[in-house]
Amino acid sequence: MRILIIGGTGLISNSITRQLLESGHDVTHYNRGKTAGLGEPTPTIEGDRRDRERFAEQMRAEGEWDAVIDMICYLPEDAQQDLAAFAGRAGQLIVCSTIDVYAKPAARYPITEAEPHAPLNDYARNKSLCEGILLGASSSAMPVTIIRAGHTYGPGSVHRGHVVTCFGGRSTVADRIRKGKPIIVHGDGNSFWTSCHADDVARGFGGALGNSECHGKAYHVPGEEWLSWNRYFAIVAEAMGAPAPDLIHIPTDTLSRALPKRTRSLQDNFQFNNIFDNSAARRDLGFRYTIPFLAGMQKTLEWVISGPGFEDCALEPWYDEVIAAWKRGSESFELEGGRLDRV
Image 1: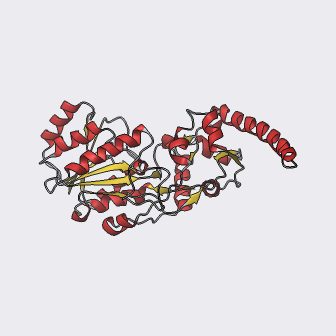
Image 2: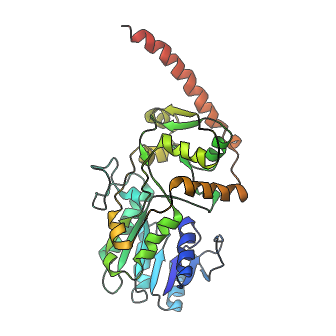
Image 3: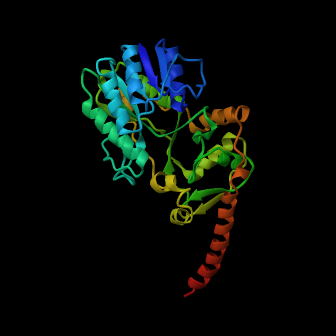
């Protein structure tokens, strides 16, 4: 198959590209040419999709594709652009979306694709709008499939947040863990989180290619190990051969009030349980969760150590200041609480 990937150099795209090439497909990327992929050099059409007229001209010049995989459809205008550019020129359109389109907390767990959309941030709201436009226009002439990815990790850009905390994803938290420094965890650390290796996520996209069963449908492909945050950090430490981390539990509301900008991901995502039912993707796409989190994280951290290295946690002095402030306050509260308990 002749396949175009819009994007092509990101974490999931690297795995998709490698798997498609290994299967004998003819793969081309469309991107700005500013970021190199991890695998073998791939033919690339250089351009910026935000230059709408130029994008349309380039796609007309390229002719027809058996399938187009859009990894960077972020805005409703991007979705409309896909429909205009590939009508009559693509046999299939597969678009990467996000599990963050769902209402949180969910009405029931595990979350299925039937759960209502009620996104809590602009990124997810725009993704939901994109889905509506694309699925609403899906037809036999150009069938559309939506793949909703969750938190994805694996070898790739060190700044993509392979290890996440209530403050988002940077490699500084992994640096803290390997140095034996305490880690802040929201709440009691017992809400659930899932992560999926990029190679497993990519197989969901590959399973949609040429597959009429998935036309006009959306699927999510997140991880299947439902890990509490406490267990999540314990596994990260084990993956790098570090001691069990010293976890500092701070109430979610306290963190949100004290650091409103740094805890945006906590407020609209991490504080909620992320538990999903992958049975639809397993049935229709042949999706399988094959890489256990411990094994996948070991390989990922090996790549970080042998390549770009960790960001130095000393670059974030505010992190230790938050811990110190919390300890001062909690110690005072515990002393006062003992008095109140006697009343």
